[in-house]
View 1 (cartoon, rainbow over the protein chains, first blue to last red):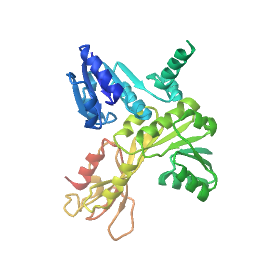
View 2 (spheres, chains in turn purple, green):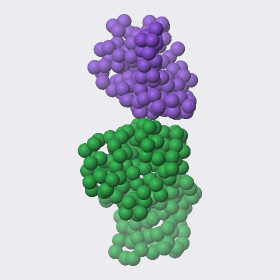
View 3 (cartoon, chains in turn blue, brown):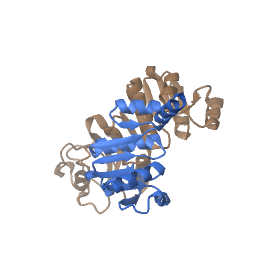
View 4 (cartoon, rainbow over the protein chains, first blue to last red):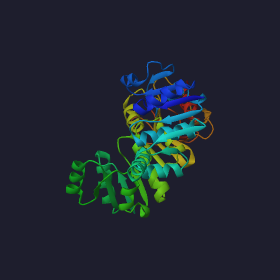
Length: 132
Length: 220
């Protein structure tokens, strides 16, 4: 599977490493080349400097042939916009998006974006830990 | 009309001022407390501090009864999300987003924003208009009809100078609306009107025919 990941923070870098180890073809985008230090030294995919909201950059990252797109920047709105570009402009079959704000995550889930809210997931997880 | 504006920067401020003067009920949502304070001091209590992309904030200010929702922050992605939340969660009939990156205009349209205003394009056009050799200026776009009104200047080396309008083979969908000669009064073009050096021709055309129209008028 060919995957494009936007945002090389802790989660992005770790996901890129895992998918790469599993044998997938990974391209990871970040606006700051310094972020790529987080990638594991064994990473054999492509690291590309550029803004994932820019269609040209996305094309360069191979979004037209991608099977999946994951938006993992720090900005909810940036993730939402990039995911919608991937889904509606480039017709990527699988688009996954991180949205910290639970309300926004709910809305965009109903609008057809596969969105996860780490806030909700982590809070639920902590509750389960504490109540068990 | 009840109009909600997201973004209390310069654009939001002057827009609110203008809409208030027209007698509308206007509310601005702005994150920065200092900007909020300034707006409330100068325009009366019209600014609420908050994130205009957050459904909770928008629910508090009665977005469901808004007639119009305008997002004019400096970030395209914020404007997109604010408008989408207003549209899909609160069913606001008309959403308008400011777009800074001209590339995003088509994307926003595809994603359901009713009206996009590209501040960059507007500034570019205005500056280009001031360049004396600029061949074609966009004056107005009539979106729902797919038409635009443009101005073409006739340069001294145009091969069409001295020719009547009827000899020009205008591209489909194009029509000359007005000719403004250099030092005389504007006139409505007839088929016998002669083009002169320095004439400014105002024409109605389509985005597809615009290049052809320019070529026909300048004889290139």
